[in-house]
Amino acid sequence: MDLTAFISGLPKAELHVHHVGSASPRIVAELAARHPDSPVPKDPDALAEYFTFRDFAHFIEVYISVVELIQDAEDVRLLTYEVARDMARQTIRYAELTVTPYTSVIRGIPDAAFMEAIEDARVAAGRDFGVQLRWCFDIPSELGPRAGEETARMACELGPDGLVSFGLGGPEKGWPRPLFKPFFDRARAHGLHSVPHAGETTGPQSVWDALTALGAERIGHGTSSVRDPELLAHLAQRRVPLEVCPTSNVATGAVPSLDGHPVRQMAEAGVPVTINSDDPPMFGTDLNTEYAVAAGLLELDEAGLAGLARNAVEVSFLDTPAKSRLCGEIDSYLTSWQQRNE
Image (cartoon, rainbow, N blue to C red):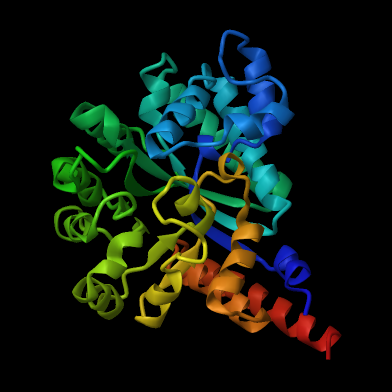
């Protein structure tokens, strides 16, 4: 069975992938060339070494250096449109892209111009590549409550048509999830879904806090959930999905190795699991690679991989007719593959 070929053509949805973190070496090098004062290498071949992380803190440092390449609305538009191009090459039909507008706005991009740029790219991506993009506006935790306040304001007062959810990223240590409750309360009252990161670099209590204080409907990462059987049972019973990013978790030190990744324990406990790439070029991966990794960790064949793809669609924030269409495309692809390989 050639799972690599199967995965490459499998229609997919991705629910945990970062806007700036999705910039390929090609895109990053182009942005770096436009802004030559940046420490980011201009040579795409040099970026692999630059994207080798000592630990999670070093990852954040490098990530911010790439964020600083986004200096005007045209940079925002270019990045977004080119990310969609790369997604289309992986047969990604739908993606909820985590966007952190605050880090661009505080560097001088007007908030309205930022919104216009991502929306223009979203419409163009659907037209040119057949990729549906939706937005999760994300608070960078390391910038504190002021970032939360401004992100909530932009989401509620300026939120573009593609905005569906509200998130929280960055370091967990020193930034407990309940600190950001007022901003999630405002976003949720405005009709946005709650999808914070939790339990990636801290323990299970962070996941509990995300559920109870932030009303989390999905959890970003949640790798430490397996250390608390009561929490795993709660996630399974309430059908709270975990957005799992295997290669990312190893690269940032959240788990020691792929062999030691807890995704199988999550799935066997009955927790809904989706597979995602997080910041793919920075971790030397993409969604197709993550599906191949998951196939090994979960011992999946083609039907199992198609089920994994359906999981992502079913727990996404797509409307019901669009979910049905994409799940139908996945099922048709599986049937056609099986018939060709009988």
